[in-house]
Amino acid sequence: MPRMTVNDRPIEFDMDPDTPLLYALREAANLTGTKSCGGGSCVGACMVLVDGAALRSCLITIAEAEGRFITTIEGLSRDRSHPVQQAMVAEQAIQCGYCTPGIVIAAAALIQRNPAPSKQEIEAAIPNICRCGVYPRLIRAVERAGRVVRRQESISAAPAPGISSADAAENVPALRVGNGGLGAAATPAPSSEETSPPEE
Image 1: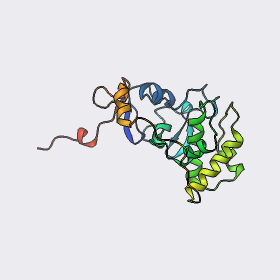
Image 2: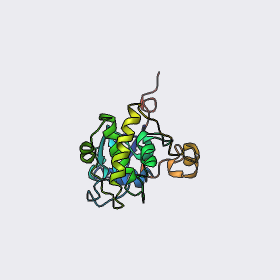
Image 3: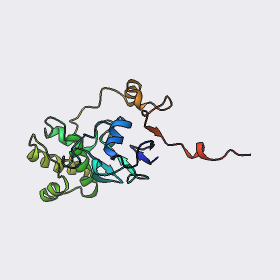
């Protein structure tokens, strides 16, 4: 059973090791912000951070993700305060929203390694397809997020969620830890205390 850290929580997936990470996240861990796609043809809707790099989760198996740190859109910033999230709202670079999580993940990875990207670097780093055509606003949003990271600007455009993480977990049984939490196929990995032999 592949184990990995998802949004700072150790998780073990009781699934076929060849299962795409995308399906494990969506169906077993109930992290549906990562969008389903056509096995790579989406060009970005299913992006997640794997050890800090933006990768398409539909093309990675859970066996390949074993032992790695995965961050989904839900884990990027629980209060929507990430500079890319704020800039996307401020620049009105969100339309239908389907591709937005993948775009935000790809942009966050870019800004992390290069807070002052050129237009060409933004276009190369964010291959996501947006059928609504937000590209000019997307470029401005990423440039603006970079300025926030460099402390040249501040933004407060995206409101915090109207529900706390604890309340969300209470309302979504698959997210509860302890009562069969994280659905039938994903469970928190045992801690080192749980797996160490008892002291004599």
